[in-house]
Amino acid sequence: MLRKTVSIPSLEAAKSFVNFTSKYDEVPMRLRVNDYEVDAHSIVGVLSIVDTHCPAEFTAKTDEDNSDMLNDIKPFLA
Image 1 (cartoon, rainbow, N blue to C red):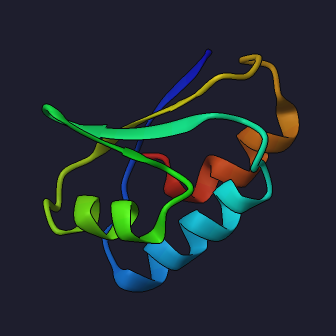
Image 2 (spheres, helix red, strand yellow):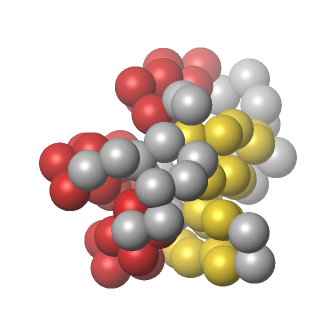
């Protein structure tokens, strides 16, 4: 399981984030802020997280040493 704290501060960042997650459609991914959790592949879900202006916990059911995913998520790390 890969867990990272991410920040998605704008509409453009949300679009970029969903483009990133779309590259990994087969990997279950979630975003969580407090008790609210959404599918990280969903633009509607990600946009609902953006409104909180809080860092979100990103989880992906993949190996923590998935170097491609780690490189792709770097711009969003909080």
